[in-house]
Image (cartoon, rainbow, N blue to C red; front, side, top):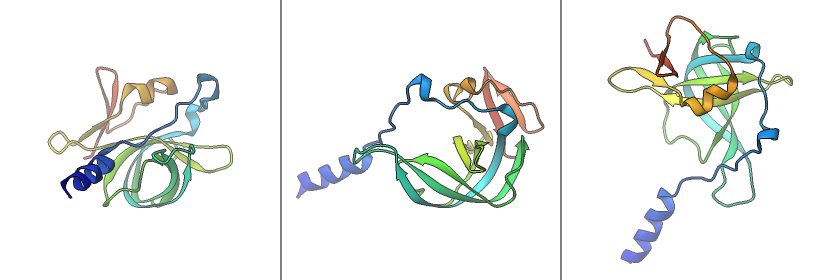
Length: 153
């Protein structure tokens, strides 16, 4: 019985696999299509697996509400966007995200961050934002050692 519980715990704790994209296949985004948005998560549905592995991530259709755009074009107060996830969120969160509007009108979440409980900042990983070649300046945005940070307040 203990062995079965340990196996179940190991299975739950295993991170999802995100298939790497060859450099040539990585999309290039026009900075005019990029936005920084703070929004509440509502739901994540319609997963589209990114590979055949059982632990592979998928592009979920996330819905968001009470959105506030800090830089770039606004997706609206309520919007839907595709985002890579291993599984849906287990509850609702207020998150910061960099999004891109694709030529077909679909919105894609490029990266997300939650807010630190003390600083009320969400700082994106440089590996996620540096390749965009975008350095937005706006109230509520700052840079910490090159990391783009968003203020919740």
